[in-house]
Length: 58
Image 1: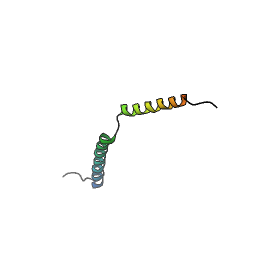
Image 2 (image 1 turned 45 degrees about the vertical axis):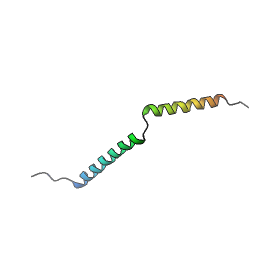
Image 3 (image 1 turned 60 degrees about the horizontal axis):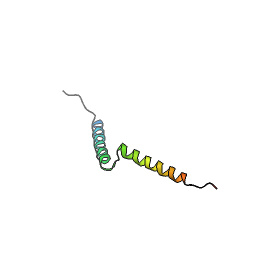
Image 4 (image 1 turned 120 degrees about the vertical axis):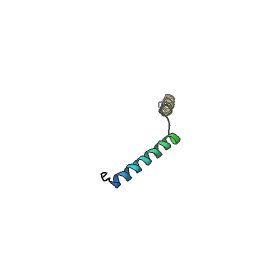
């Protein structure tokens, strides 16, 4: 005879797995790679430095 299983745990585990797969699909579809994020951040810092360098002191 097999041991009884908790159906709530099975349901929750199945739901967790489906959410994880959906999250992975969305990350591939909409996400940015680490290099892309770093490039955006570097570009923003460079623009900020350029603007600060052109400010006048009054």
